[in-house]
Length: 277
Image 1 (tube, one colour):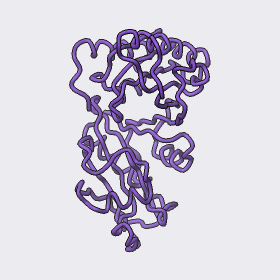
Image 2 (cartoon, one colour):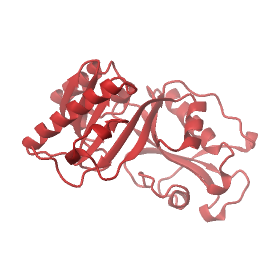
Image 3 (spheres, helix red, strand yellow):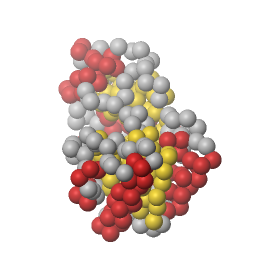
């Protein structure tokens, strides 16, 4: 988490909220403490420069007010282009770009990343119903100490590109399911796990959701995410959010079944060179 926001950063965040009608992504996901510049066109779109929370680089993001509107996407990209030039002229060139899906094709060459990934933002503020699995009462969610050696074993096997690692100070909970079948020696009997982090907004965020390849298709990830989501909301968190790669259809089915809503499709990528001012 970035340092606490100052009054100016809180004003920038309020401007984004107002321009995008209190959008869930802006409310729960954006940390005001990382904001440095903002441009908005109320009801159409916004763009902002911030310190990327995971990569410690300067990132620029555009958000269409309606992610399904080509007009709003174009407006948001235009704001981004102007803001990137302004930031570069001030000596702070951006090194990564995120746009609403469909906006990458509208970017100038100097702001088009050579590689990009598609991802979706999901959120809920309603606790899901308990998940019924084939294991019935044998299923139990447990908390793991961050030093548990099984965490890197399962992540390395099931999710080697997971962005969160044991020891990351952002993690407030490592939650897991022990193998209900009593096997899986390659992960010390660990069948599924996730890392819960906390945003400045107070919302919980689900990361590193991983299921052992030999236990997929048994609703373990669904049960784990459902329980952690219910626990977070019961503890007073205003919402639970997550991001997932857009082509992960099994995950999409899980989060839909748990009552999460996908509100934004985004495209992100680093730049190989800074845009000129």
